[in-house]
Length: 166
Length: 371
Image (cartoon, rainbow over all chains, first blue to last red; front, side):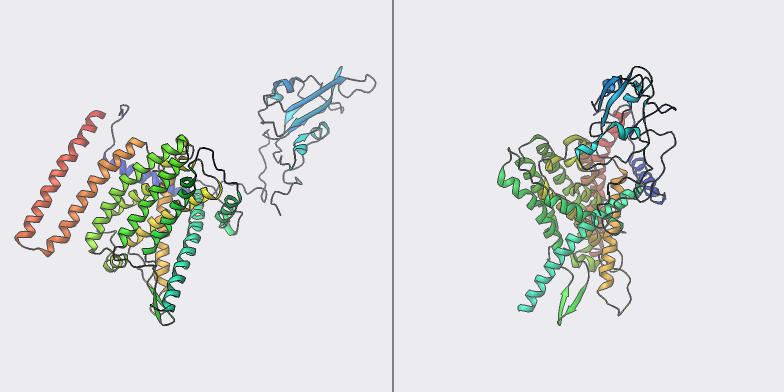
């Protein structure tokens, strides 16, 4: 049995190491808990965090940034994004340029929140928000449509799904 | 024995059975809460006040889950193994005195199901039965990981039972009693934990290994063996293994309390409910031992299998033997003062030296290999 060059500790050395270890663990009892008691108490997420739901952004004049290029869908390792592009009506464009997203869906049963879609997006149309209350009660609800994704996320703790089961 | 005696006996058995079920429930909750404390978490919170009903909720869930019967299993053995895991765990507790006694309907009702004159042997016998459950479950599952877990655990439990047995022998020699009540009686002046501290440590280590608790949970090492011997069990049958395991933990804590910590002994007001004090003291001591178990679990990582065996056979058992010898000398010498006493003392010292000469080269060689 190789001891990998380390000297085997003697009895007192080993016993005191175990005792010190147990004392260290015991001391943790007096440290305050770090558990967040969600949803009773909602701790605000850091300002720059992007750990939750996607959002489709608009330009300042109200036009959608998304140009329907489908790069996000190609980048997605979980195949969670569905994009259908179409040509803009020059009289009444949805987005600047030639193309826009006619349909845009993200399936949150598939999404793994890796953010590769955001990296792939050439126009910064797709970003992640810090809204993490993504529970749903049916498969249909798990698929978010373009209209839903264009909306800014509501404040945390206002999701209509009843998590307490009461 | 008349009808009333029988009725009281049955009532006692039912009461202990129910109390043990509740005790297991609370033990699991206690362990989760304490370990959460050590990890600066809160642990269970939702079910009941401070999450005390979490085990009940888990139990109900397991009860209603589908019990999958894998295709390769040896049906009768597979089905009976969880029962074997649970039953001896209950039976072992029968001889543990958890209080003094109370007078009901003019009868003296002891706080103990049965005061066997060989009580400690009964406990050893019953806890050893637990090995059968593990071995049978592993074998009957017809799958690789359970079998490996069963083989590991049978070797481990048998090895550590020897060390634990030696610690018990030392205590019993010191007390001069085999029945649990007698052992408590012998601790009226000073608890055994003081003169028999090394035996106490050996007993706790052996007890941890015997109940497959961390750091000796190699039978169900999830990083190596999925879930060990109960990999193929689900639903209520898994719950029975779980229950048996925690029952064994409670029993080991109760036996440690009885043998080393003076059982139900402790200061109490005279006159006011004289049965309540001992009961409370017993519970407090058992909880204290359980706390130490949880602290050990939270601190020490799982041992490697070869080191486990080395520790059991090359450290615990030789040490236990030396300690039994020393205890024997201390007990017998005062009785045999004179030439025989001196002879015995000489023999004991000689034996110690011999043992040391056996053990020292082993230690020395390990050091040399290391350097």
